[in-house]
Image 1 (cartoon, helix red, strand yellow):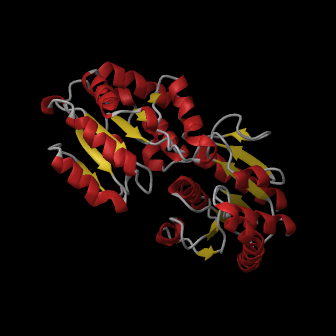
Image 2: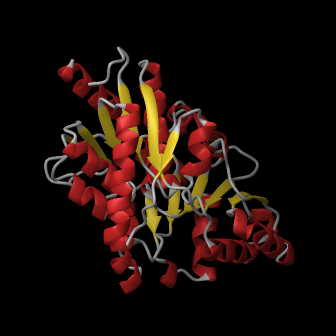
Length: 362
C-alpha cells in the first residue's frame, strides 16, 4: 500500500473512445472519493490528448495489438511486451498505486502483468459482449472481474458500462420525446473516429425521402471524413448539421428523437442511459464481430433494429428512417425499452470495487 493516506488508483485504458470514455467516467467517481489517479496509455491512442485534458497524469507505453495484423506484428510482440512491462514497472514504482484498474485495450496487459508480480490488486472491466484478448487473459488472474454485458466472462459481476454522469441525468424518454414536435430529429454517429460507410449511406438514404418528411439531422462524421460528408449532403441537397466530433454527448442525446450508429459498447450503454431507439449498423471488421453481439441486447428487448452494413441498401435505410420519423409511438416504445436496460450506477460500482480493495489492505 502507498504511504499516502489517500487511496491511489492506476487506470489502464487506451486506443479508442470505447475504452477511454468509460474509464474517465470511473475516474470522475474516484475523484469524488478523494482518490489520487494516474494513467497508463499509448501515444497513438485517443487517451494521449483526452487524459491530460482531464488533469490526470499519464505514462505512455510502447505496446500494440497483434490480432489480425499479420506475421510482422507477431514477431515484434515479444520484445515489445518486455519493453512495455518494464515501462509499467517504472510507472508502478513511481506512482505507488494501491489498486490498478484495467478498462480494456491492449495497454491493459503489460500493466496487469507488472501489478500481478508486485502483488497489487487488479480490477478488470470488460465493456463488450465478447471479451477482448487482453481482458480474457488478465481476467484469469485479476482480483475482481466486472462486465458491461451479462455472461461475457466466467465469474464476472455484471455492472454495466460506465457513461458520463450528464447522460444519466437526461429526462425519461416519455417526458422528453414529444409526439407533437414539428420536426423529428435524427442523430447520426460513426464512433470516435467516424465511419466512411455511414457517412456515405445516410445522406444518400435521406435523399430518397421527400424533403418535407425528412428529419432534422445532426451528423458526427469524424475528423478525417468531415469535408467529404459535408460535400455529399450539399450535392444531394439534404440539410444537415455535420460536425467532426461531439464533446457534450448529453446535448446530442437530449436533442435527438432516434439514432443511427455503430454498436460499440459505450454507444450501446449511452443509448440505454439516454433512452433512445436506434438503427444499429455493427462495424463489420470488429474482432470477433463483438459489435453485433453488443447490439443484440437492444434488439432482443425491442430497443433497436440491427442491419449489417453489407445488407443495408440506400432504399432500405430510407424506408427505416421514414418509419421512425413519422411514427412517434414507435420511437417512444423503443426509447422506453432502451431506458429499462440502463445501468446508470456502473461507474459508481467500478469505483467502489477499486476502493474495497484499498480498505481491505488498510
